[in-house]
Image (cartoon, rainbow, N blue to C red; front, top):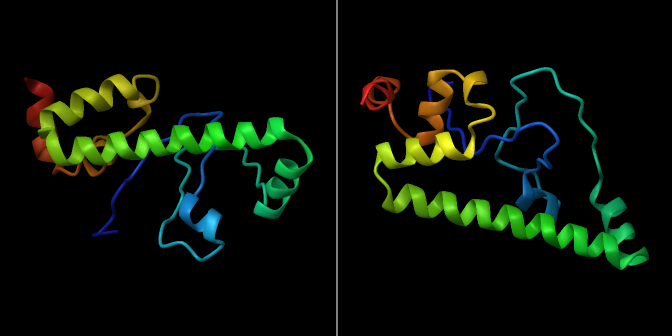
Length: 125
């Protein structure tokens, strides 16, 4: 895709969702794509809502996931607004050190919001 963007990477054993769509139950504008063979468990919203009502532990669990995702989103937005491309790359390397070697340079560049050529220059420094 010529207009492809990468918003986030998730490592194995992560909760992945188009969270806004999940909460509103409206169609999402985003695609979620696995870059490796994956085992996926689909949990419908009504099922989670029922768990939350049955046991407060599940409600707390859901809140913790929400908090974690909200912090990731806020940190990402802040990084895009205030950090240079080099700083974003260094943050990326720290945050995704366990999956960086499984990603192409193009995927990393799309995530950082820079051209692959710029990423190559940054990596040489």
